[in-house]
Image 1 (cartoon, helix red, strand yellow):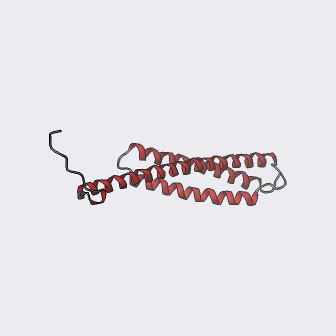
Image 2: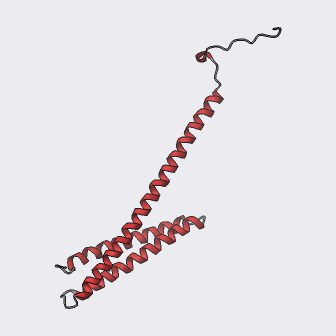
Image 3: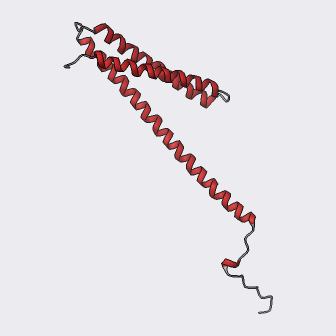
Length: 146
């Protein structure tokens, strides 16, 4: 075997590591963590959106059931206030859902719609506050015993 002998490499703890290698490793680590955090956040937001939609549907269904019960008892003392509150609540729920859908549409399609989206979300929040108050009054005036 004629040839040059290869110089043995130093033990692992004595090898030289450049700052560029360290920087690349740190960047890769934090990039991976950021991707994991973003995926986790997206999953949580998606789950929250689905659960909010299910709650909206259940409230609308509950109001429809209360309306049916109220219409079956037309001689009830608070018939008209109860029916009007239920209808107002249902109408406001539909308006709030349309505003939220419009806000989501602006997020996905229009580039500079941040201010408009915040306004729509604020109006939807105010409407949801009125929905909560209307449903509290509905429970006060509801037909008991059925």
